[in-house]
Length: 246
Image (cartoon, rainbow, N blue to C red; front, side):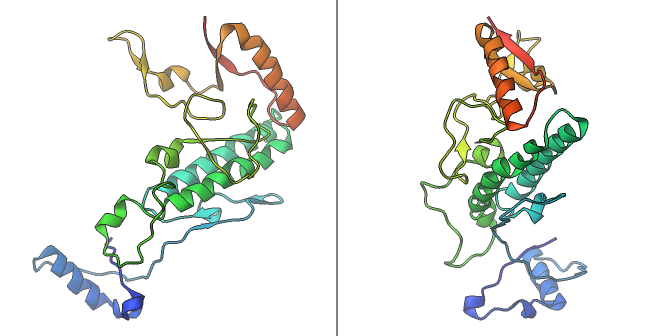
């Protein structure tokens, strides 16, 4: 697949990019007279769109139906997979009876801010340097542009399914970025544990179970407080695995 740009402000139109024109462009790009077959030519325009709601009755939106964004920072696929995962385990928990139906509402609460943040952050990106653009190229103010980690895995969830000692943001679409190890956030370090020969990534030690990283002396108090909060929210009511330190 080959992608090129055109500039409507300069009088260019998608109609001028015929199969023959596309073949000529490819030959010019390669600099060699090679056998090229152009199967099809189609116009494409990047969008930044996020649905107002992610659910209507028994229908849930994930992927591009929930949030569409340019591919310049790989945000589209990553955001889609994260949203699908967020819905999948909650839906499974409800169907298995380990969570109340209220947990499904947190899919929107947690993922809508991330969708909006990622869509906006995806407007500029490294891929733009490989594309011919005019003066209308999308840009973000320097103070707003976030690092790639924030876009792909650096957001902290705030919802009724998350126990936190911090206040909920007044604006529900504000994204909290991970700056330290906190609840409802990905463990921020790929550090290894163990000796030089037996070292394994921390994520591998965690395994697949639900995990709380706590100090041993406050484990029981935190667990009971967290379960009580979850029950009130109609969310998870199940013991998690604990990884403790003395």
